[in-house]
Length: 151
Image 1 (cartoon, one colour):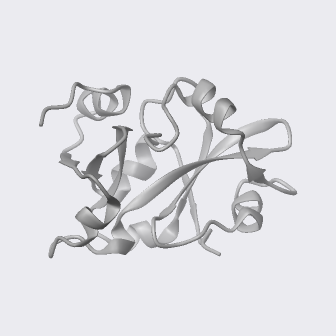
Image 2 (cartoon, rainbow, N blue to C red):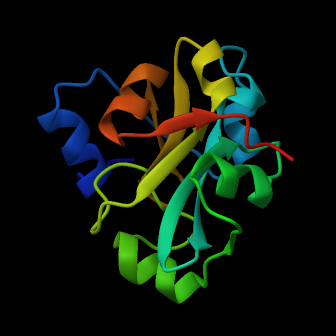
């Protein structure tokens, strides 16, 4: 099955980042593969800080600690963004939000566990499509901070 280039994939290509596109019907399809651990598949969450939205990228099996994410970004508190706000700000549909190529550049924090892998998977910008990238490129291209933000 082919996928047209999303803004996220286009950003990776423009930056010259080596990546692999993977199609799946359920996240378990990815984690059932012998070469992919569930903890190296990440989800992109949009959070609301006082006066702004931000991005938190955490392993799929984990829950986000809103308190830890807020602290990492220097905010007093955080909550999950409203889906409509997340979609309008990123240009992606909830369930397919990529950390790359978002409509508006948001401050980003990536869970530090990403750095323990040679590659991590995150949304390619379309539901049922992930992109595998080196974690250093995830952090660099999103200008992310890294911190332990798992609950």
